[in-house]
Figure 1 (tube, helix red, strand yellow):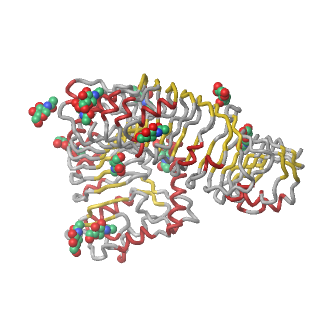
Figure 2: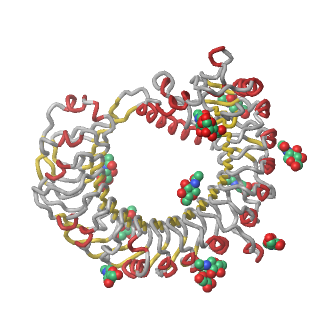
Figure 3: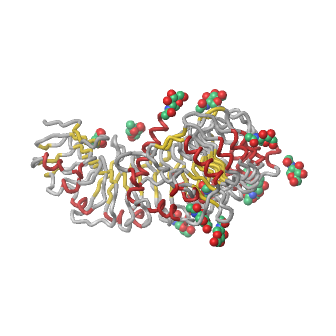
Length: 569
Ligand SMILES: *[C@@H]1O[C@H](CO)[C@@H](O)[C@H](O)[C@H]1NC(C)=O
Ligand SMILES: *[C@@H]1O[C@H](CO)[C@@H](O)[C@H](O)[C@H]1NC(C)=O
Ligand SMILES: *[C@@H]1O[C@H](CO)[C@@H](O)[C@H](O)[C@H]1NC(C)=O
Ligand SMILES: *[C@@H]1O[C@H](CO)[C@@H](O)[C@H](O)[C@H]1NC(C)=O
Ligand SMILES: *[C@@H]1O[C@H](CO)[C@@H](O)[C@H](O)[C@H]1NC(C)=O
Ligand SMILES: *[C@@H]1O[C@H](CO)[C@@H](O)[C@H](O)[C@H]1NC(C)=O
Ligand SMILES: *[C@@H]1O[C@H](CO)[C@@H](O)[C@H](O)[C@H]1NC(C)=O
Ligand SMILES: *[C@@H]1O[C@H](CO)[C@@H](O)[C@H](O)[C@H]1NC(C)=O
Ligand SMILES: *[C@@H]1O[C@H](CO)[C@@H](O)[C@H](O)[C@H]1NC(C)=O
Ligand SMILES: *[C@@H]1O[C@H](CO)[C@@H](O)[C@H](O)[C@H]1NC(C)=O
Ligand SMILES: *[C@@H]1O[C@H](CO)[C@@H](O)[C@H](O)[C@H]1NC(C)=O
Ligand SMILES: CC(=O)N[C@H]1CO[C@H](CO)[C@@H](O)[C@@H]1O
């Protein structure tokens, strides 16, 4: 668990470094030049220095912190902000957001501020109202009890710090807190949330990754926070609420965002959520134990804009309750067991309301059947995923009029018929198209003129097993941003065009297997010596090429390329 998270950290940190590199560290420079006039208080300076001694700073990101004469003003240290009237330190933010990473990109591949201990001298910073140590690795050390005495704190973020030990319920003493994030640490199980209602100003709460499996009354504790707007409890082993009539009384009416991804919640969660039916805009219940049909009470959450119920066991084909969700922008019901006719489902869904607001519709991986209806009434739709269902029949030409679409995923159905240029006529924003069928369940034929100039610039196109005619699709040449192409098993019987290698430049994946493509290769070593082929995964197997090859290029951490497989028939 821990090592997995460290890997993720490294990866993210590396991505961040690249980003910082591109931005040239402008943000942080600005930060350092600010508040030149500040003069910090000696006692607080000593506290900060003691705090620094508790850290391992291999990348020297805290180089501005020091006892040298030119570094005397601790209000100018990176991550530190003082009151410009009293000089007291008000803010200590050592999250990666404020760190200056630009200097060390080359010799230190990632940002690594580690903690041996959180110095108790930090308690000297009595005026501190913002403390953010997100992502500093404290490697299982105990949560510092004294933090419960920093009574002016309004903002506390100790997420991903790998603190361990007993869950720090003494944060309940920080009654001014508005923002509390203790997510993804290594605390033991929480016994109760009795301390939570003390935080009556709390607006934002994130306890993700904390085991709350024994806290059956967690909804009551949340209800007692009158100002709470954002609640995030990912992966908390949350039990389904056992609701007493009391839980409806005096509940806060402010919750706007509820993210309960990956817990043990059943449909009774909706009863609790209906307390918030006038405030809730964002609801994520992905990976829970929601079963049976889509509950009616959802229909009363009329302010919802984002609803994600994917990866549950919801069934049936009657989404009546959705017809009242008039502000819905994103609906994800993928990976459930919805059944019935798609056309009826869509008709109920959008007969009254959300047809003009909906931007994302994901019904993939269900058991929806029947033909694809005319969806042009969903006038704002950008993402349409209907893959892995039981859809049959043709793809209506009307889809070509849905000009905002950027993603179409229809693969793994039983669709058939001809696809023409009309199907794409106004799709200038299309970036991602998948009509493939790995086991020939779709049997689509692309009938497109050789000189077609598509309206779009795709990133990814997957047409595996769609029949494309004998000729190598010339229009692919027009796609300048494309990184992923699958035209395997497409019935192409042609000579590999000379422009093929320039098409592959900067691509990640090109799959031409199972065609009748002929031709020989010029000097492959020359072609592949070009660095722009660094990450290409190219599959040309099962063709009639003189050189049959399956090439995997991988980029190792030493930036050395190597060929894993090179088959010559
Ligand atoms: C800092 O000083 C300026 C005037 O120089 C004042 O307008 C501002 O409110 C002060 N900010 C704080 C946080 O005290
Ligand atoms: C983290 O703690 C473990 C023991 O709990 C220790 O073996 C390991 O060396 C520590 N790692 C670092 C980087 O301090
Ligand atoms: C929290 O508050 C209680 C009582 O108000 C007090 O006894 C306790 O010492 C406080 N804990 C901390 C860490 O400040
Ligand atoms: C959470 O705690 C419960 C009860 O102690 C335990 O059964 C469960 O495995 C824990 N969950 C995780 C993810 O460790
Ligand atoms: C609800 O609030 C009222 C007045 O603020 C209070 O008298 C009552 O005891 C509260 N009810 C519950 C169940 O907390
Ligand atoms: C709180 O939730 C709202 C609604 O989803 C969102 O717009 C906002 O960014 C969230 N606030 C924070 C601090 O994450
Ligand atoms: C939904 O709201 C209506 C009033 O707008 C109410 O009559 C009905 O009981 C509510 N349904 C549920 C399931 O809460
Ligand atoms: C919200 O839910 C409450 C209780 O479930 C219900 O009485 C009320 O009518 C609902 N309001 C709306 C607007 O649906
Ligand atoms: C589109 O909406 C109009 C007006 O709401 C309606 O008359 C028409 O039947 C709808 N078309 C489809 C294909 O659902
Ligand atoms: C292949 O398609 C059939 C339906 O034609 C489906 O039942 C089966 O699950 C598919 N196989 C895979 C591996 O997806
Ligand atoms: C290319 O496509 C075929 C058939 O769809 C598939 O079996 C093969 O794994 C793909 N090759 C690569 C390298 O992804
Ligand atoms: C980096 C920093 O400390 N910035 C502060 C400088 O002072 C202004 C008020 O004048 C604050 O708003 C900044 O946060």
